[in-house]
Image 1 (cartoon, each protein chain N blue to C red):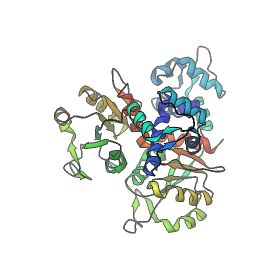
Image 2 (cartoon, chains in turn yellow, green):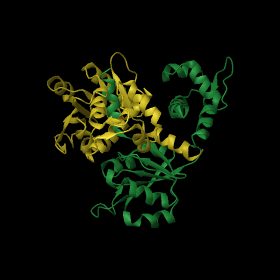
Image 3 (cartoon, each protein chain N blue to C red):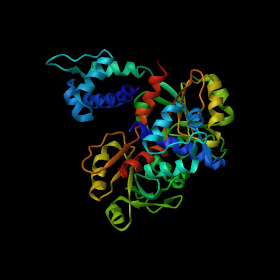
Image 4 (cartoon, one colour):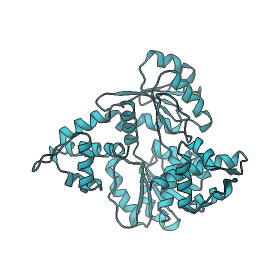
Length: 200
Length: 200
């Protein structure tokens, strides 16, 4: 899993290199940018069957394509956001996700004042329409941007609809079961890590 | 560092127990809630000098106080947010941070349309006033919620002002130097981890 957590960074760097017209790179060069040792990088890439060539290094396109496959980025994902508050709408409006193939297709909320509006073209839909929407539209991931108290209940609704991926921003660790995959973004935990670092 | 990353979760759970009036707990009980083995929990806590007592377990208050000290949560932090877009204002408006002693004191932006407004009482200030503000108000942490292109430049401005902690939401790994402590929240990397999980 530690390797997997590094792959998105490799991917971002390699995409930057590509945008700058660079067609090949070395573990040494990646190492300098990424602050990971060159031998760690070679080991990580070897793990996934990407071998550099002596005197040539790695082809940037080759690495990008391999990492894309490993991370499942060789396809697009449809994402719904539950909770159209400040955080939910911030996610929907952020162009970088779309560039990577993560497409927000709808926001859901219970607030009748905002239902019917849209955020950069992403419609805000009545939460009561959730089951109806998901039955009629392919959805891969649900992002939970709602209060702590409602997270578990909504998680179970989403799970019952056959959505396999949950991107959880509620500050609660969900009780998962079966095939569900959950990626937690605990912003308070992240701030606590920073306060720790400030005191060592 | 892996232990440190688990501590905020321990802390959250223990605070929940306390709110529910529970005054003591065991590694077994924590293990069930946290999906970490009981022996891992005992080891983590032993590391920091917190020993449970046979037949009694751990005092919840004692653990909370110890973890607070380790994570530097026995004091408050003043945080400024650079970039008052959707994400920056979402952070400023989120009550949980304040509850943990993380106080957002100002947002900074270059958009004259919003300068002078406030988000739940947190003022939006002209970016040109940054140096002036930080000279006259204690600031521990700067949260960077601005576009990729400007992140490094703003990081250096913040660093020159003596702010030691940076909570980085820009999708760029900052080139740090000296005593600066950076905690990155790379939301795109997080989504990529989820897409990986969905494909294994």
